[in-house]
Image 1 (cartoon, rainbow, N blue to C red):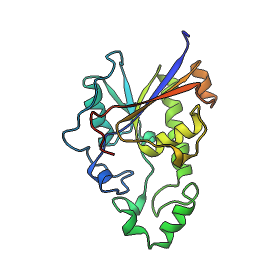
Image 2 (cartoon, rainbow, N blue to C red):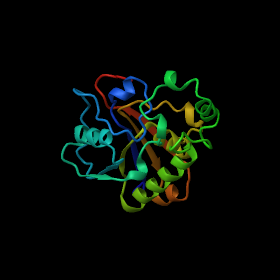
Image 3 (cartoon, helix red, strand yellow):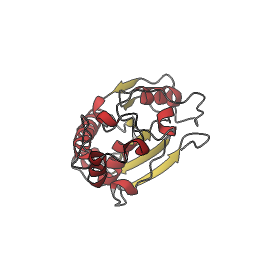
Image 4 (cartoon, rainbow, N blue to C red):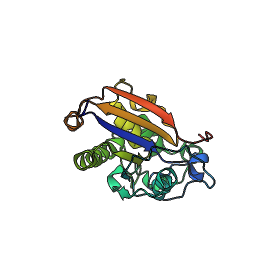
Length: 199
C-alpha cells in the first residue's frame, strides 16, 4: 500500500528514579549510564519526542546524528508535589489514595489528571502526524499507554498495556487521515530495543 502510514512510539531508556520506582513525570533526570541498544534502520530521517532529558538522550543513543525535534505536549503526566516520591512514601496520604481510585479525573497537588495528560498528548500526536510522514516518537510510559488504548488494533484498558523502557511500538494505518480521524490502527508490532532488559 503506497499510502500506508506508520507511527513508531518508543519509551525512553530507564533512569535511576525509574529503578527506584519513583514518580518522575516532569522531573528532568538522565538515563542510566552504559545503556546498550540494538541498531535501528538507517532510513529514519527525523525523530520527534518529549523535551525531557531522558527522551533526548534515548534519541542520541538510538539514532545518533538524526535531528531530534522536541514537543513538550509529549511529556509524561505531571505528578506535581508527588514527583520523586514512591508509593511507600505516599500510601498513607488520603489525597494519594483518592487519586489511585480515580486517576483519570483526580490530579496530584500541583499536578495533572490522566484526562488532562491525554488531551495534551493527543494534541501533540496530531501536530506531529500533520507535519511528518511515518513519525518516530520518543516519549514516556503514560503517553504510550494512552495512545495504545486509543489507537491500538487490540482493545485494552490503560493499565492493561505493558510498556517497558526501551520498547518500540509500531502502529500501521491504511493512510494518514485515518489517524487524524481517530481510527484504530490496522496492526501493530512490538520490539525491545535494549540489548539487556532492565525493567
